[in-house]
Amino acid sequence: MVGSNQQKIDESETVLINQTQFGVEKPLFEEPAGIVDDSKTSPGLSQPKKKNPMVFILGSVVIVSIILLLISQALGHQPVVLVSHPFVTPSPVTTPEQDFYKARLSELQQDFRAADPTQTTLPFPPVSLSISLDEVKR
Amino acid sequence: MRQPVFGLFFLFLVVGIIWPISIVFAQVSSSPSSSPQPTSSAPLDQDAAAQMSTLRSQYRTQLDVYRTDEHNFSLSRDQYNQLQTLTALEEAVKSTQKVLLSRDEVLLTYLKMLRLTFTQTTGVQLQLKNNQLKIIDALIMAINRNKDLASHAVTRVQADQAALDFAAFSPLLQQISSQTILIMSYGKVQSLFDKTVTVRNEIKTHVLQQETDPLKLSEKQRAFVQIDQTVDLVDFQLKGVLAGLSGGQNFQTTQTGEQLNQAYAGISRTFAYLDEVLAH
Image (cartoon, rainbow over all chains, first blue to last red; front, side, top):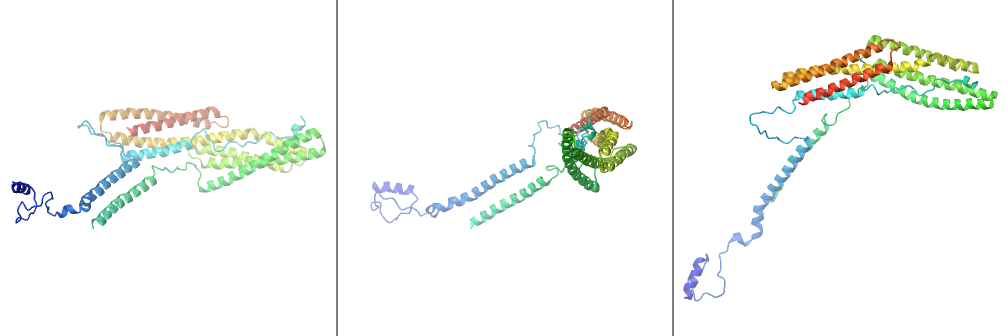
């Protein structure tokens, strides 16, 4: 009985057993010797090796996305607007010619500020126009 | 073995992103739209600008000297008024001579600056410009003559004569100065208006040609009708200003100045309309 039980246990386990030894001779309350699996004996090296490229890749993706966000803010890009109506094509925000004319208008506005009639750079000098010693007599 | 590979990969990733970003930021900071250079709107060329700079420096110095001399003149005049002595009179005559001379210096330098700026102003009709320059030159001659009189004024009578000579043309000084400044303002506004009309024509041609949507096209045509009306009104106002300025020395500076301000405001409206048309 004892030998048959031990055989069942042994069949369920993938262990190498000295098949010449009888079940009775098998030491009791001892763990059977298991297969030495090389992959399980040094847990400190394999998992990080699998994780290392993922860490770098994830980190790179995060950094790239942050940088792209900063670039778009710096250049003042407008967020992409999804067109709900599929048949209407919106006209472009500005064309090169429009930018050219806007620049010309901007230059003209600088000339406009310089041409302000209320501003003068040559006011009449603050001198008295009635200097006379003759006033002493009066 | 794999660690240096990932390290190199990371390094290339960082360098490949940071370097183009720095180039982009450098281009953004140096682009004309982000840091617009103010265009010089002063009508002076380089030689005239150098002359003007020298005259301004002289003017500031002479004005300081005049203020000191005027103060001394007031003191010596009051002193003579109180003491009535020959010594006090001598001091009063000397200080009068000094202040008359320093005043003439200030006014001469001012008229030279005014003349120089006026000759450089564009947008003014040639005849109007020449007539005004003749008047300014006549005033300069009058002041030089008075300066000569004042330099020989060692007695009380001579000092009085120099003062009287100055009083004969002094009312013209402020009047001619105001008129000249108004003519210069008109020239600047007229030049600005001429450029505005050119830009308006170009924008109108471009916008009406580029617009394909019939609804938007008719909207923009109506907008340009309004812009054209505004431009025509400004043109009419500027012609009125020119007629006023060409009326000789008797033109009303105040009324003409008001009309010029209205024309200036009309140009501002035109810019706003054109900006709006380009934005839509």
